Amino acid sequence: DIVSALVSAIEVKDKYTEGHAQRVREYSCDIAIEFGISKAKVKDISTAALLHDIGKIGIPTEILNKPCKLTEDEYNIIKLHPIYTKTILEKISDFANIANIAYSHHENYDGTGYPQGLKGYEIPFESQIIQVADAYDAMTSERAYRKAMSNNQALEILEEIGRAHV
Image 1 (tube, rainbow, N blue to C red):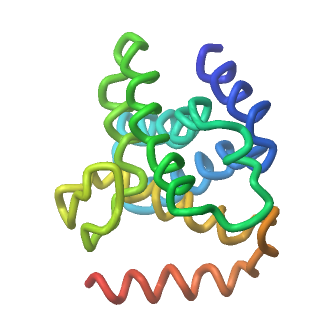
Image 2 (image 1 turned 180 degrees about the horizontal axis):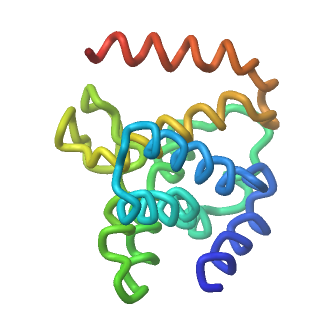
């Protein structure tokens, strides 16, 4: 119930994320199962994926719903949401691992991500799974500032990124 309430809270604030958390959860679980990850870890990935953007509740609505490109300052504010996510989730009993997985979902394999600038194997594998699922959903969803990509276009981009980091 707590998880559902938190997801509803962010969806009320950010209209563009409606359904996003559930899709990222589904994609993340599918990827994790394909990798043969244990049921216990899949459960943590499922919960972390569902709550990965809860920290956006701390981001001003005018930035979240801005219909055009963000300024550098606005983007730097958006980049705070994983920190807020971790802060919120750490308050829930037995959610330390889930909080850490969600916290790292914007870390990039080459070290250019945020909030910690982790690189390669420093990034929890569970977070990497959520990042791929999140990126795929973001690319294939309609946004105020751009049209949705086709599934094939999004997969080609993800494959290209993956090849660059092998």
